[in-house]
Image 1 (cartoon, one colour):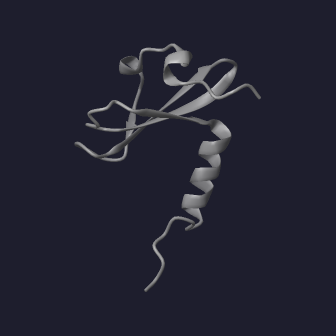
Image 2 (cartoon, one colour; image 1 turned 90 degrees about the vertical axis):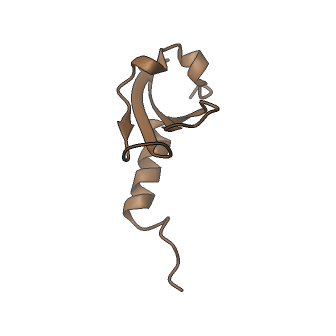
Image 3 (spheres, one colour; image 1 turned 135 degrees about the vertical axis):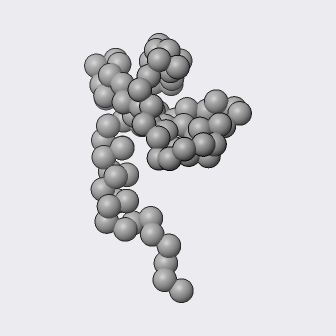
Length: 79
């Protein structure tokens, strides 16, 4: 597999994407799904983040994250 592209290398207008949000307002997580360079990518950002940082994940990385979340991998330990 080729190196993971940056948002700039994907070459799309992120303002035109269909962002899905975890809620409303600043601090919510937003994701968008795109196809570029022959692969599917998941873009993740925090609504209201001043830096505008957007992380890029391969579809495999995203699916592994979702699997872990569904199986309690990221739950707080009981204590």
